[in-house]
Image 1 (cartoon, rainbow, N blue to C red):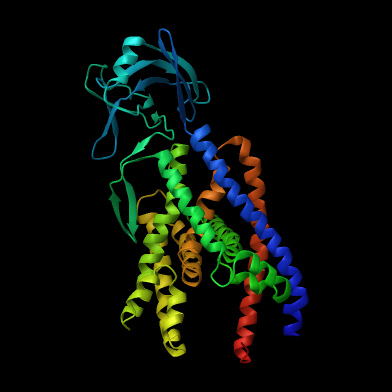
Image 2: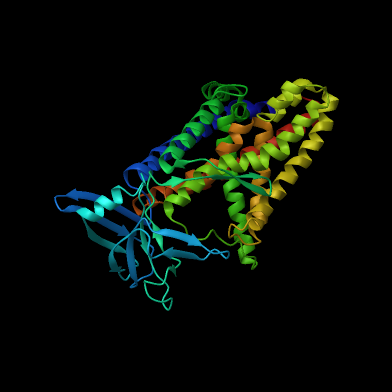
Length: 443
Protein backbone atom coordinates (compact mmCIF):
# COMPACT_ATOMS: atom_id res chain seq x y z
CA UNK A 1 0.00 0.00 0.00
CA UNK A 2 2.85 2.40 0.86
CA UNK A 3 4.60 1.79 -2.45
CA UNK A 4 1.37 2.17 -4.41
CA UNK A 5 0.50 5.53 -2.85
CA UNK A 6 3.91 7.06 -3.43
CA UNK A 7 4.10 6.06 -7.07
CA UNK A 8 1.30 6.78 -9.54
CA UNK A 9 -1.05 8.90 -7.40
CA UNK A 10 1.80 10.76 -5.77
CA UNK A 11 3.48 11.43 -9.12
CA UNK A 12 0.33 13.21 -10.36
CA UNK A 13 0.36 15.31 -7.21
CA UNK A 14 4.06 16.04 -7.80
CA UNK A 15 3.37 17.39 -11.29
CA UNK A 16 0.46 19.56 -10.12
CA UNK A 17 2.46 20.93 -7.18
CA UNK A 18 5.46 21.59 -9.45
CA UNK A 19 3.35 23.75 -11.77
CA UNK A 20 1.92 25.66 -8.79
CA UNK A 21 5.39 26.29 -7.40
CA UNK A 22 6.72 27.48 -10.75
CA UNK A 23 3.91 30.05 -10.91
CA UNK A 24 4.91 31.27 -7.46
CA UNK A 25 8.55 31.44 -8.57
CA UNK A 26 7.54 33.50 -11.62
CA UNK A 27 5.67 35.94 -9.37
CA UNK A 28 8.76 36.26 -7.16
CA UNK A 29 10.94 37.13 -10.13
CA UNK A 30 8.32 39.66 -11.28
CA UNK A 31 8.65 41.40 -7.92
CA UNK A 32 12.21 42.41 -8.83
CA UNK A 33 10.86 44.36 -11.80
CA UNK A 34 8.19 45.96 -9.62
CA UNK A 35 10.87 46.97 -7.14
CA UNK A 36 13.06 48.47 -9.86
CA UNK A 37 10.09 50.51 -11.09
CA UNK A 38 9.45 51.99 -7.64
CA UNK A 39 13.11 52.73 -6.96
CA UNK A 40 14.13 54.23 -10.30
CA UNK A 41 11.10 55.25 -12.36
CA UNK A 42 8.51 56.21 -9.76
CA UNK A 43 9.97 56.40 -6.25
CA UNK A 44 7.51 55.06 -3.71
CA UNK A 45 8.18 57.89 -1.31
CA UNK A 46 5.91 60.11 0.78
CA UNK A 47 7.55 63.10 -0.92
CA UNK A 48 8.47 63.15 -4.60
CA UNK A 49 10.15 66.29 -5.93
CA UNK A 50 11.32 67.06 -9.46
CA UNK A 51 13.28 70.05 -10.75
CA UNK A 52 12.68 71.57 -14.18
CA UNK A 53 15.11 74.22 -15.47
CA UNK A 54 13.80 77.29 -17.26
CA UNK A 55 15.16 80.68 -18.41
CA UNK A 56 14.63 82.40 -15.06
CA UNK A 57 16.04 79.57 -12.95
CA UNK A 58 14.12 76.40 -12.16
CA UNK A 59 10.75 75.10 -11.04
CA UNK A 60 10.45 72.53 -8.25
CA UNK A 61 7.28 70.42 -8.28
CA UNK A 62 6.41 68.68 -5.02
CA UNK A 63 3.89 65.89 -4.54
CA UNK A 64 3.52 64.61 -0.99
CA UNK A 65 1.25 62.21 0.88
CA UNK A 66 0.81 60.89 4.44
CA UNK A 67 1.17 64.31 6.09
CA UNK A 68 -1.13 65.88 8.65
CA UNK A 69 -4.29 67.09 6.94
CA UNK A 70 -5.05 70.82 6.58
CA UNK A 71 -1.73 71.84 8.15
CA UNK A 72 0.85 74.46 7.20
CA UNK A 73 4.14 72.97 5.96
CA UNK A 74 7.39 74.45 4.61
CA UNK A 75 9.21 73.21 1.51
CA UNK A 76 12.92 73.38 2.28
CA UNK A 77 16.04 72.41 0.30
CA UNK A 78 19.07 71.07 2.21
CA UNK A 79 17.97 71.89 5.78
CA UNK A 80 20.27 70.81 8.62
CA UNK A 81 18.33 68.29 10.71
CA UNK A 82 19.55 67.25 14.17
CA UNK A 83 18.06 65.19 17.00
CA UNK A 84 18.42 65.50 20.75
CA UNK A 85 19.11 62.63 23.17
CA UNK A 86 15.45 61.58 23.16
CA UNK A 87 15.31 61.44 19.35
CA UNK A 88 13.28 64.64 18.87
CA UNK A 89 14.15 66.21 15.47
CA UNK A 90 15.09 69.87 15.09
CA UNK A 91 15.93 72.03 12.10
CA UNK A 92 18.51 74.81 11.99
CA UNK A 93 16.46 77.62 10.50
CA UNK A 94 19.57 79.33 9.13
CA UNK A 95 20.47 76.31 7.00
CA UNK A 96 19.50 75.45 3.45
CA UNK A 97 16.99 77.25 1.28
CA UNK A 98 13.32 77.84 2.12
CA UNK A 99 11.20 77.84 -1.06
CA UNK A 100 7.83 78.59 0.45
CA UNK A 101 4.93 77.50 2.58
CA UNK A 102 1.96 75.35 1.63
CA UNK A 103 -1.10 73.96 3.37
CA UNK A 104 -1.88 70.26 3.05
CA UNK A 105 -5.27 69.20 1.74
CA UNK A 106 -7.95 67.29 3.66
CA UNK A 107 -6.15 63.98 3.10
CA UNK A 108 -2.68 65.21 4.09
CA UNK A 109 -1.43 65.68 0.54
CA UNK A 110 0.48 68.38 -1.29
CA UNK A 111 0.72 69.07 -5.00
CA UNK A 112 2.44 72.36 -5.67
CA UNK A 113 5.20 74.06 -7.67
CA UNK A 114 7.82 76.48 -6.37
CA UNK A 115 10.02 78.77 -8.51
CA UNK A 116 13.74 78.80 -7.78
CA UNK A 117 15.44 82.01 -8.95
CA UNK A 118 18.73 81.89 -10.81
CA UNK A 119 20.75 83.34 -7.85
CA UNK A 120 19.22 80.79 -5.47
CA UNK A 121 19.79 77.98 -7.96
CA UNK A 122 23.41 79.05 -8.33
CA UNK A 123 23.85 79.04 -4.55
CA UNK A 124 22.35 75.53 -4.31
CA UNK A 125 24.55 74.21 -7.10
CA UNK A 126 27.74 75.60 -5.54
CA UNK A 127 27.17 74.65 -1.88
CA UNK A 128 29.51 71.63 -2.12
CA UNK A 129 26.79 68.96 -2.08
CA UNK A 130 26.50 66.61 -5.04
CA UNK A 131 23.08 65.31 -3.90
CA UNK A 132 20.50 67.78 -2.60
CA UNK A 133 17.57 66.98 -0.35
CA UNK A 134 14.05 68.33 -0.45
CA UNK A 135 12.04 68.27 2.79
CA UNK A 136 8.46 69.10 3.64
CA UNK A 137 8.80 70.31 7.22
CA UNK A 138 6.25 71.05 9.91
CA UNK A 139 7.42 73.37 12.69
CA UNK A 140 5.96 72.74 16.15
CA UNK A 141 3.89 75.71 17.22
CA UNK A 142 4.86 77.76 20.26
CA UNK A 143 8.59 77.36 19.62
CA UNK A 144 9.41 81.00 18.85
CA UNK A 145 10.02 82.81 15.58
CA UNK A 146 12.14 81.74 12.62
CA UNK A 147 15.06 83.72 14.05
CA UNK A 148 15.47 81.49 17.06
CA UNK A 149 18.11 79.00 15.85
CA UNK A 150 16.74 75.44 16.19
CA UNK A 151 13.05 74.67 15.76
CA UNK A 152 11.35 71.42 16.70
CA UNK A 153 9.79 69.46 13.83
CA UNK A 154 6.44 67.72 13.66
CA UNK A 155 6.38 63.92 13.42
CA UNK A 156 5.12 63.97 9.83
CA UNK A 157 8.07 65.98 8.48
CA UNK A 158 9.35 64.07 5.47
CA UNK A 159 12.39 64.01 3.19
CA UNK A 160 12.25 63.36 -0.55
CA UNK A 161 13.82 59.90 -0.90
CA UNK A 162 14.95 58.75 -4.33
CA UNK A 163 17.49 56.35 -5.81
CA UNK A 164 20.13 59.07 -5.35
CA UNK A 165 19.50 59.50 -1.62
CA UNK A 166 22.68 58.80 0.28
CA UNK A 167 23.32 56.61 3.29
CA UNK A 168 26.40 56.36 5.49
CA UNK A 169 26.08 53.03 7.27
CA UNK A 170 24.34 49.65 7.47
CA UNK A 171 23.26 48.10 10.78
CA UNK A 172 24.10 44.39 11.24
CA UNK A 173 23.18 41.85 13.93
CA UNK A 174 25.06 39.31 16.01
CA UNK A 175 21.91 37.86 17.58
CA UNK A 176 20.78 40.57 20.04
CA UNK A 177 23.89 42.74 19.55
CA UNK A 178 23.72 45.41 16.84
CA UNK A 179 26.52 47.40 15.26
CA UNK A 180 26.83 49.77 12.32
CA UNK A 181 29.18 49.23 9.41
CA UNK A 182 30.16 52.63 7.98
CA UNK A 183 29.57 52.31 4.23
CA UNK A 184 28.88 55.22 1.89
CA UNK A 185 26.18 54.40 -0.66
CA UNK A 186 23.05 55.73 -2.28
CA UNK A 187 19.78 53.83 -2.39
CA UNK A 188 20.06 53.00 -6.08
CA UNK A 189 23.49 51.43 -5.60
CA UNK A 190 22.29 49.53 -2.54
CA UNK A 191 19.34 48.04 -4.40
CA UNK A 192 21.52 46.97 -7.32
CA UNK A 193 23.95 45.21 -4.97
CA UNK A 194 21.16 43.54 -2.99
CA UNK A 195 19.23 42.39 -6.07
CA UNK A 196 22.44 40.98 -7.58
CA UNK A 197 23.07 39.00 -4.39
CA UNK A 198 19.51 37.66 -4.34
CA UNK A 199 19.64 36.63 -8.00
CA UNK A 200 22.90 34.76 -7.35
CA UNK A 201 21.27 33.00 -4.40
CA UNK A 202 18.27 32.12 -6.60
CA UNK A 203 20.63 30.59 -9.17
CA UNK A 204 22.44 28.56 -6.49
CA UNK A 205 19.19 27.35 -4.92
CA UNK A 206 17.79 26.32 -8.31
CA UNK A 207 20.88 24.24 -9.00
CA UNK A 208 20.94 21.90 -6.00
CA UNK A 209 21.79 20.53 -3.52
CA UNK A 210 20.87 17.06 -4.91
CA UNK A 211 19.23 17.94 -8.24
CA UNK A 212 18.65 21.11 -10.21
CA UNK A 213 15.09 22.39 -10.31
CA UNK A 214 14.19 20.83 -13.67
CA UNK A 215 15.70 17.47 -12.80
CA UNK A 216 13.77 17.44 -9.49
CA UNK A 217 10.50 18.24 -11.28
CA UNK A 218 11.19 15.48 -13.81
CA UNK A 219 11.96 13.03 -11.01
CA UNK A 220 8.68 13.93 -9.30
CA UNK A 221 6.74 12.55 -12.30
CA UNK A 222 8.06 9.09 -11.37
CA UNK A 223 9.02 9.22 -7.72
CA UNK A 224 6.38 11.62 -6.44
CA UNK A 225 6.29 14.75 -4.32
CA UNK A 226 9.26 13.82 -2.17
CA UNK A 227 11.55 14.24 -5.21
CA UNK A 228 10.81 17.98 -5.13
CA UNK A 229 12.74 18.21 -1.87
CA UNK A 230 15.93 17.27 -3.73
CA UNK A 231 16.04 20.88 -4.89
CA UNK A 232 16.60 23.81 -2.55
CA UNK A 233 14.43 26.28 -4.46
CA UNK A 234 11.42 23.97 -4.62
CA UNK A 235 11.76 23.08 -0.93
CA UNK A 236 11.86 26.78 -0.07
CA UNK A 237 8.76 27.47 -2.18
CA UNK A 238 6.87 24.70 -0.37
CA UNK A 239 7.89 25.84 3.11
CA UNK A 240 7.37 29.57 2.47
CA UNK A 241 3.52 29.70 2.41
CA UNK A 242 3.32 27.31 5.37
CA UNK A 243 5.56 29.50 7.54
CA UNK A 244 3.67 32.65 6.50
CA UNK A 245 0.21 31.40 7.32
CA UNK A 246 1.17 29.53 10.48
CA UNK A 247 2.61 32.76 11.88
CA UNK A 248 -0.44 34.72 10.70
CA UNK A 249 -2.68 32.21 12.47
CA UNK A 250 -0.66 32.51 15.68
CA UNK A 251 -0.87 36.31 15.56
CA UNK A 252 -4.65 36.21 15.04
CA UNK A 253 -5.09 33.87 17.99
CA UNK A 254 -2.93 36.09 20.19
CA UNK A 255 -4.86 39.19 19.21
CA UNK A 256 -8.15 37.40 19.90
CA UNK A 257 -6.79 36.59 23.36
CA UNK A 258 -5.83 40.21 24.01
CA UNK A 259 -2.08 39.81 23.44
CA UNK A 260 -0.73 42.68 21.38
CA UNK A 261 1.61 41.86 18.50
CA UNK A 262 2.24 45.55 17.80
CA UNK A 263 3.35 46.89 14.44
CA UNK A 264 6.21 48.72 12.82
CA UNK A 265 6.05 52.52 13.16
CA UNK A 266 5.07 54.45 10.03
CA UNK A 267 8.01 55.20 7.74
CA UNK A 268 8.63 56.58 4.31
CA UNK A 269 7.70 53.77 1.87
CA UNK A 270 11.03 53.88 0.07
CA UNK A 271 12.96 53.59 3.34
CA UNK A 272 10.65 50.76 4.38
CA UNK A 273 11.41 49.16 1.03
CA UNK A 274 15.14 49.39 1.81
CA UNK A 275 14.58 47.70 5.16
CA UNK A 276 12.59 44.87 3.58
CA UNK A 277 15.33 44.31 1.01
CA UNK A 278 18.28 44.27 3.42
CA UNK A 279 16.68 42.52 6.43
CA UNK A 280 16.80 38.95 5.03
CA UNK A 281 20.56 39.05 4.50
CA UNK A 282 21.58 40.68 7.75
CA UNK A 283 19.09 38.80 9.94
CA UNK A 284 20.00 35.39 8.50
CA UNK A 285 23.68 36.19 9.05
CA UNK A 286 22.96 37.31 12.61
CA UNK A 287 20.36 34.76 13.70
CA UNK A 288 21.02 31.61 11.66
CA UNK A 289 24.69 31.61 10.58
CA UNK A 290 25.94 32.87 13.96
CA UNK A 291 24.09 30.45 16.32
CA UNK A 292 23.56 27.41 14.06
CA UNK A 293 26.37 27.62 11.52
CA UNK A 294 28.97 28.48 14.14
CA UNK A 295 27.91 25.48 16.25
CA UNK A 296 28.33 23.18 13.22
CA UNK A 297 31.68 24.83 12.45
CA UNK A 298 32.99 24.32 16.00
CA UNK A 299 31.93 20.67 16.00
CA UNK A 300 33.98 20.08 12.85
CA UNK A 301 36.88 22.17 14.16
CA UNK A 302 37.01 19.87 17.20
CA UNK A 303 37.77 16.95 14.88
CA UNK A 304 40.43 18.87 12.95
CA UNK A 305 38.22 19.56 9.91
CA UNK A 306 38.99 23.27 9.53
CA UNK A 307 38.11 23.68 5.84
CA UNK A 308 34.83 21.77 6.08
CA UNK A 309 34.08 23.58 9.34
CA UNK A 310 34.22 26.92 7.56
CA UNK A 311 32.12 25.56 4.69
CA UNK A 312 29.55 24.41 7.25
CA UNK A 313 28.68 28.08 7.74
CA UNK A 314 27.28 27.93 4.20
CA UNK A 315 25.55 24.53 4.47
CA UNK A 316 25.72 22.89 7.93
CA UNK A 317 24.09 19.50 7.26
CA UNK A 318 26.10 18.82 4.12
CA UNK A 319 29.47 19.04 5.85
CA UNK A 320 28.39 17.36 9.07
CA UNK A 321 27.11 14.38 7.07
CA UNK A 322 30.29 14.35 5.01
CA UNK A 323 32.59 14.07 8.04
CA UNK A 324 30.53 12.34 10.75
CA UNK A 325 29.97 8.66 11.31
CA UNK A 326 26.25 7.78 11.69
CA UNK A 327 26.66 7.69 15.48
CA UNK A 328 28.50 11.04 15.55
CA UNK A 329 25.90 12.60 13.29
CA UNK A 330 23.07 11.56 15.63
CA UNK A 331 24.90 13.14 18.57
CA UNK A 332 25.64 16.28 16.64
CA UNK A 333 22.06 16.48 15.40
CA UNK A 334 20.82 16.84 18.99
CA UNK A 335 23.17 19.80 19.46
CA UNK A 336 21.95 21.32 16.19
CA UNK A 337 18.33 21.02 17.36
CA UNK A 338 19.24 22.98 20.49
CA UNK A 339 21.00 25.62 18.36
CA UNK A 340 17.94 25.96 16.09
CA UNK A 341 15.67 26.37 19.13
CA UNK A 342 18.01 28.95 20.70
CA UNK A 343 18.25 30.81 17.39
CA UNK A 344 14.44 30.90 17.11
CA UNK A 345 14.01 32.19 20.67
CA UNK A 346 16.59 34.94 20.16
CA UNK A 347 14.95 35.85 16.85
CA UNK A 348 11.59 36.20 18.57
CA UNK A 349 13.00 38.26 21.44
CA UNK A 350 14.90 40.55 19.06
CA UNK A 351 11.66 41.79 17.52
CA UNK A 352 10.66 43.25 20.90
CA UNK A 353 13.95 43.95 22.69
CA UNK A 354 15.61 45.85 19.84
CA UNK A 355 12.88 48.47 19.81
CA UNK A 356 11.38 47.86 16.38
CA UNK A 357 7.87 48.64 17.62
CA UNK A 358 6.50 45.09 17.91
CA UNK A 359 4.43 44.00 20.90
CA UNK A 360 5.07 40.95 23.16
CA UNK A 361 2.84 38.76 21.00
CA UNK A 362 5.36 39.04 18.16
CA UNK A 363 7.86 36.93 20.11
CA UNK A 364 5.96 33.66 19.56
CA UNK A 365 5.13 34.13 15.87
CA UNK A 366 8.67 35.31 15.06
CA UNK A 367 10.13 32.38 17.03
CA UNK A 368 7.97 29.91 15.08
CA UNK A 369 9.16 31.50 11.84
CA UNK A 370 12.68 31.21 13.23
CA UNK A 371 12.25 27.43 13.57
CA UNK A 372 11.31 27.19 9.89
CA UNK A 373 14.17 29.46 8.86
CA UNK A 374 16.65 27.57 11.04
CA UNK A 375 15.54 24.17 9.80
CA UNK A 376 15.78 25.24 6.19
CA UNK A 377 19.23 26.74 6.79
CA UNK A 378 20.50 23.53 8.35
CA UNK A 379 19.08 21.24 5.64
CA UNK A 380 19.59 23.40 2.53
CA UNK A 381 22.11 26.07 3.47
CA UNK A 382 22.36 29.85 3.47
CA UNK A 383 20.68 30.55 0.07
CA UNK A 384 17.49 28.75 1.10
CA UNK A 385 17.02 30.53 4.42
CA UNK A 386 17.76 33.96 2.91
CA UNK A 387 15.29 33.38 0.06
CA UNK A 388 12.61 32.20 2.50
CA UNK A 389 13.11 35.33 4.60
CA UNK A 390 13.20 37.48 1.44
CA UNK A 391 9.90 36.02 0.26
CA UNK A 392 8.25 36.73 3.62
CA UNK A 393 9.57 40.30 3.90
CA UNK A 394 10.09 41.70 0.41
CA UNK A 395 7.97 39.62 -1.96
CA UNK A 396 4.75 39.82 0.07
CA UNK A 397 5.15 43.58 0.63
CA UNK A 398 6.33 44.99 -2.69
CA UNK A 399 2.87 44.84 -4.29
CA UNK A 400 1.44 47.05 -1.53
CA UNK A 401 3.65 50.01 -2.43
CA UNK A 402 1.15 51.35 -4.94
CA UNK A 403 -2.66 51.19 -4.91
CA UNK A 404 -2.65 50.06 -8.56
CA UNK A 405 -0.86 46.84 -7.56
CA UNK A 406 -2.87 45.99 -4.46
CA UNK A 407 -5.28 43.79 -6.41
CA UNK A 408 -2.35 41.74 -7.69
CA UNK A 409 -1.02 41.60 -4.13
CA UNK A 410 -4.38 40.34 -2.86
CA UNK A 411 -4.42 37.54 -5.45
CA UNK A 412 -0.87 36.54 -4.57
CA UNK A 413 -1.80 36.46 -0.88
CA UNK A 414 -4.77 34.18 -1.61
CA UNK A 415 -2.53 32.01 -3.77
CA UNK A 416 -0.04 31.57 -0.94
CA UNK A 417 -2.94 30.63 1.35
CA UNK A 418 -3.93 27.81 -1.01
CA UNK A 419 -0.30 26.71 -1.29
CA UNK A 420 0.06 26.74 2.48
CA UNK A 421 -2.73 24.17 2.76
CA UNK A 422 -1.14 22.00 0.07
CA UNK A 423 2.33 22.45 1.55
CA UNK A 424 1.14 21.54 5.05
CA UNK A 425 -0.43 18.33 3.73
CA UNK A 426 2.78 17.49 1.84
CA UNK A 427 4.97 18.02 4.91
CA UNK A 428 2.63 15.96 7.09
CA UNK A 429 2.47 13.08 4.59
CA UNK A 430 6.24 13.02 4.14
CA UNK A 431 6.76 13.10 7.91
CA UNK A 432 4.37 10.14 8.29
CA UNK A 433 6.12 8.30 5.48
CA UNK A 434 9.56 8.83 7.05
CA UNK A 435 8.31 7.75 10.47
CA UNK A 436 6.79 4.55 9.04
CA UNK A 437 9.92 3.77 7.05
CA UNK A 438 12.06 4.11 10.20
CA UNK A 439 9.57 2.05 12.18
CA UNK A 440 9.77 -0.85 9.72
CA UNK A 441 13.47 -0.44 8.97
CA UNK A 442 12.97 0.83 5.40
CA UNK A 443 15.26 3.36 3.72
